[in-house]
Length: 259
Length: 168
Image (cartoon, rainbow over all chains, first blue to last red; front, side, top):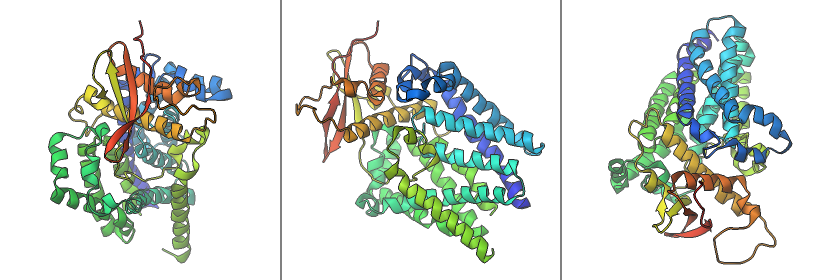
């Protein structure tokens, strides 16, 4: 239990803090999109809220959501520096960051950045629980939950891909790099479109995802899979621009390594 | 690990896996969909297929994809990517409109082949209005927008806006 608390706090909390800080800063840069002049104006989104609209408007109108993002930023910055404070003080930034991350996702009708929001929420929530009930079975349960979500995030993604012939035959990445929303740099897209490179990368990705539960065997296996996973997410960030996934998953790895 | 701990861990994994597997199939209600961040499905890129595309045409111009108008992804976006991630959020809004229209059941809808949409039950949808605002964000003055979806090797028109006059 001491190992869990130590590693989760010493490595996990700073990584979670970086992940949440990036999320908050990115939205602050793009705050116009959340304003009444932007795409995600509250005057449009509120129409789905029915009787909850007055209450939701307090949080989600332009000034309210900026406060939520500011709270996410402030609590993320406080997270690494409050690890050894009394329980209530240590837990507060983690809870605030968790709730702010959830509120932001809900305003975007589910998620802003897909699975990266979910993983960040899992990690921040675990820190909140571990800091609130340190050294208890509740804290152990929260850590186990992070590990379960982490392992399943790879395994389910891998197994789900097996149903698609493009993945099984190694052609999938060559297709995905052409999707316009990712605006993959042409040099990378061309390289991954070459059958030899594309097939190796596609099947390698599939193998990593499907085999990830082997990380649970022992600490050395966990280290190998964490290193491979970190490299995988770094490549995803470079190829597809999925930077938030890298940080969110990095923040989850210490729970697996401390198991 | 004791047998009890192994059993508890196995049960936890099973429960989380079940939730993840059921997640996509069951979250259709808008209120529940807003909380889907709590029930991740983890099915990243499970089908290597093309996505719906939003195309925009300014008055008298050619249809252009959002990505063509936006240009290349900004540099260093592997670390900090505010614009690239907002761009992905825009694409998610386009995907969501297509998904909602696919589930919409309008008994009295006409069978017209015209994809220009004027039905207020559709143009009033939050998803429709979000996509219209995305188009307005990238358009220059009066414009039209449409969404095309992959069908075989080609893309076909799915829904289109009337001419939208630029806000004054």
